[in-house]
Length: 157
Ligand SMILES: [Zn+2]
Image 1: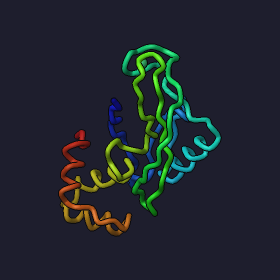
Image 2: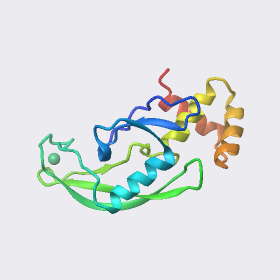
Image 3: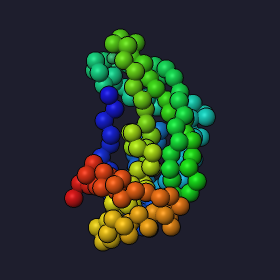
């Protein structure tokens, strides 16, 4: 099963995230969410997405093969986008895995950068004020209940 990545630090505006996703492995750099999405889509189109070396179920190396693609929508700071997500199949244990880009949180419709920013705002604002902020910033009505869930799930400090 996929293990959601821990949230990483964001800059003061919450717009830049340090990322080292596999499709530009080794280059740790700050990119806006839009840039990350564009880069990912381009890598997908050009068949440059990289897959893990080791199967996370059986632990063998070199047994993962591209298997299927599905599309999922992602809520961003601008319009929602639909991104392709690839799956891999292990030829030995026959398990399949989803390879999510780093800006996506598993089981969450909001981009990681949006959740990051909301949690950062929550440090100084009430839940209601954060919901208002997201309405202004993303034109999305986020339930206070959802903000509570994000905080419980992702707040590390
Ligand atoms: Zn395997």
